[in-house]
Length: 112
Image (cartoon, rainbow, N blue to C red; front, side, top):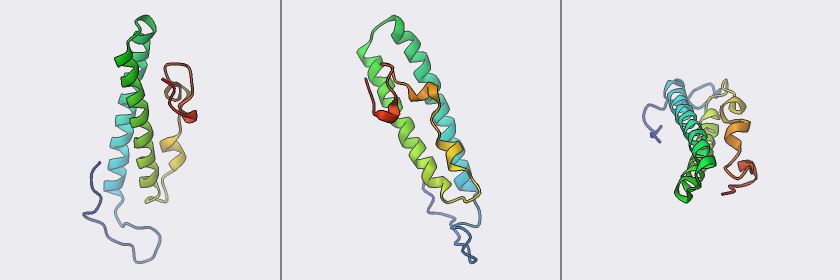
């Protein structure tokens, strides 16, 4: 995760913490792109796993699920810096990436 410590300018009117949301928005977009790739990767690995049981592949899927959750938490924190950005749209779990390989829901914990 890139540091946001450089280039921060407090807003004098108290409306928000930064005068320029560009770096924050760029970081959010990068994290969202990473999540999309992780979700796609998990879908591909799940298809293969359905045909051929593989403990390492199952572990990789679990690691991706944890990474996705961490990235979403970071996005949620970054969205708090931008009052005009919807947090819900950035971190909402879809049904496809909320399901793990055993059919469980990652919102209830990781089931591998």
